[in-house]
Amino acid sequence: MTTVDPVQHSLLEDMVAMLLGTALVALGIAFYTHAQLLTGSTAGMAFLLTYASDWRFGPLFFLINIPFYIFGVMQMGWRFTCRTFVAVGLVSLFSELTPQWVTFSTLAPAYAAILGGLMMGVGFLILFRHKASLGGVNILSLYLQDRYGIRAGKFQMGVDVCIVAMAFWVVPWPQVLLSVLGAVAMNLVVALNHRSGRYIGVS
Image 1 (tube, one colour):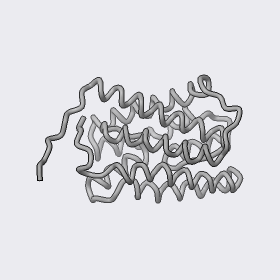
Image 2: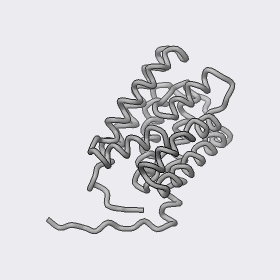
Image 3: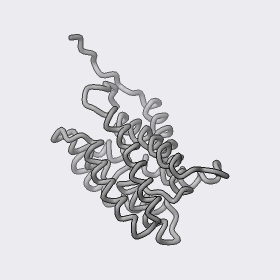
């Protein structure tokens, strides 16, 4: 069996990937916000607080992630944590700007749940492959996969379902059920594609 050495990502490739990944996540967030849906991880916490208060998603998402950077530095190193800080900052920025660039006259909630979840999943995958994440549970899931072999997608899915379940106290139950569907779609992308040895590019 022929082995191929990992190919080092260039700085430009990392920068483009960071912009592309965060832009896709922010577009998925725009879908979810319009349809009053939620997702998991720290983004789910930000959605819950957004729907329950007058705060906007972007600032909440940035603030909620701050405590997780300490864990990120301890477990994943400064380089990964700095990239994650930039990614979280870009998602927070893009989530504020995207509604100014894109508006919806019609957006079916089921379509928003599935396609928005898939877009966020692809965005997460791009960031993972360039040694970044969106903080919070994503940092923990990547650590558990690298350290103990626990699949990041499966662990993330379990946490996401728990967080989405809390939404029954905030949004109508049809939106909660669609949010679960979206969480499955999002994490399916990661579970099927983010496996050790399948992708050999490094940053």
